[in-house]
Length: 189
Image 1 (cartoon, rainbow, N blue to C red):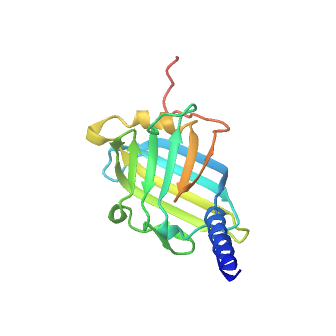
Image 2 (tube, rainbow, N blue to C red; image 1 turned 90 degrees about the horizontal axis):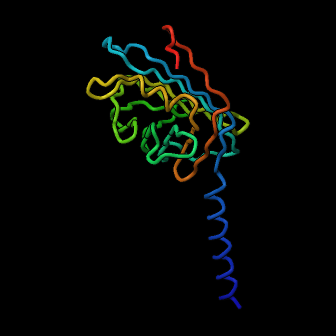
Image 3 (cartoon, helix red, strand yellow; image 1 turned 120 degrees about the vertical axis):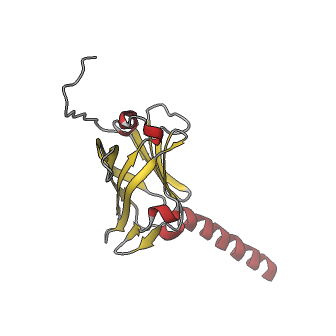
């Protein structure tokens, strides 16, 4: 009889721990991506990325121990994703929420397909609000490798579904609209 109680207790503890480990999954309530071609600090053409998302949940994990991946994927799915940002575990440090302190030292990568792009500026911030939801913001300036024109990067960033992966949990949101603004006269298509 005592042995049976111990087994049941162990099973309940295992079940509770497995439920708790998946309870922190999240949804993307809103996301906005803006990308434009500008100049980097050296005066070369570069893409300037501004991304913001609002995530819903009532408890988030310790972000300092989680790997975070943000990806933009065309409808229908392409493998690998056309554009993604990889922020390894340990990059986010606590500071009025969490932020990435040293993107080069911790190994942040931005990839277009399988090509790693050259990041010149990077900042990411993750703030959990009092209601349990979170605000995630990412700002980056990057150029193509080997002097390739950065214009093709804008396509996957504009109007693509956005996916955020935090540790083993993920959520995606389709684009609600895409807006293109050009500083030069557009070419007819």
